Length: 133
Image (cartoon, rainbow, N blue to C red):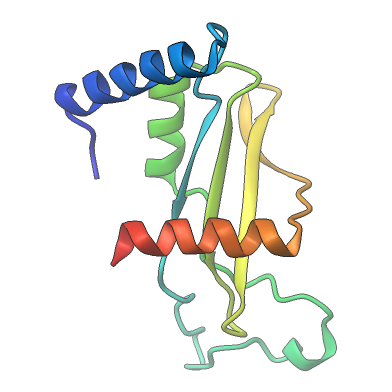
């Protein structure tokens, strides 16, 4: 997906409108969020989960990762601003939703710690699904 000039014009218009309505001239877009609405690929043996899946407390086979295209887009839009974040939603091999947040560290987008509250997860997932379907 790529944004056109018209898309950016509409985003700027909505941001101006929000600033005026909320009385907050300093409001700005601080990042982006999107989803990878598919599960991880099967491994070399054709398995969905890894051999030690049942022994691990958390599954790290996930599609909630920043792809090379995601990283390029983020840098082209936010030009390496240290406050800008990238939030990616996806699925792990256990069919559980996962969220990852990325922020700048030494000039590179790196995964950052995240703690989502149950109500936040439900709201973000519903918003993401409404964009997909």
